[in-house]
Image 1: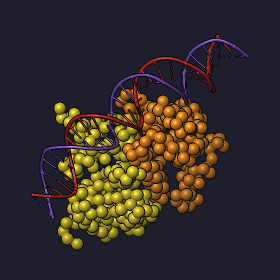
Image 2 (image 1 turned 30 degrees about the horizontal axis):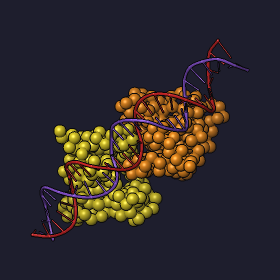
Image 3 (image 1 turned 60 degrees about the horizontal axis):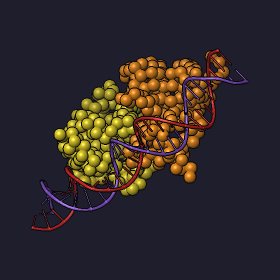
Image 4 (image 1 turned 120 degrees about the vertical axis):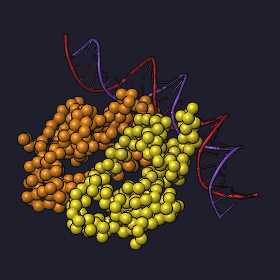
Length: 196
Length: 196
DNA sequence: CGCGACGTTGATTTGCCTCAACGATTGTGG
DNA sequence: CCACAATCGTTGAGGCAAATCAACGTCGCG
């Protein structure tokens, strides 16, 4: 394992959620597996079972699915200090409907189902950490749903730019349009309008 | 406490998620508080802190928020065997942005923040049960978001009818329209089209 | 250089909203 | 038990947000 795989980021993440002993931390470290992925490569494809949950040390990815017309619909753009994976596929061992593609060369920690269970048994506090993580995801996706239902594309775009000002530098605009639930052409028109 | 407050439904719910001992079950029962609410009464209003999580023994409710124009936007229609509450408000003790109204006279179990923590300490398996519950909520709301982004109102209505065929008998149509993110008038037109 | 990926622009179409009006049903007080 | 209001669903005309389609300019890169 090379030195790009530092525990410091993920340790800081853990410390923000729960308090653990040095021994518990060591055990946690022991079940983390390193993973690197190059730009344009896929971490997961629809139909595969998602065997891991991933923590992003560095890099940028996108998760998406294909709608019935075959259009890619972007779900999220995980960057540094985010967790990602297909929780449903991972938990129930069923084929995923998601694709995950690296948008930049990325460095990740990964943890498999069996070891995650083991971790929960040995250190129940981690059950809490993951519950808190899911809870935050739930809150975030709820807000996104309400925005999609009740707000215009222009408002959603402005909120996206406020919330994730760094993402547009790393992700092509047409992918952001897809995330917002609009066409690239329409996003372009929104930007023109806002610029004037 | 009268006999309408039966443990059998919630016990069955627990048993579907985790295995516990009779003593653990007794402790769980000891922290449940009974609650009845009449049709048209509110269980929660925006601005209040959500002090409880609720399990529905019987009845039907709706949770909604007000968008910036003051329109009610329905979020879910909890019925028998569902959990509800405002997780964000409950967890972080911040004012809720949700309203919860009973659509029928309803019978609930409720559990407060302090006792929930106590439960997690005494019986860690419950941390798992709540994690699984949140996980299912997350999966459900994700699907709803993707449907809202990528599908037409007609498709969403048909999926709603397949998934919750019993709800339309209990909830007025204009509330279902709001849940689907469309106007009552447009839902009416969709129904006319589908009927022919 | 030439090709593919990306963003922009304009013309046209469509999904859904707004507003206004109108029955049908339910509920409620006199 | 009736009268009346409130609630709920429907219908139609018109309008707007956003999609579709097609064309074009730019940039980075093999």
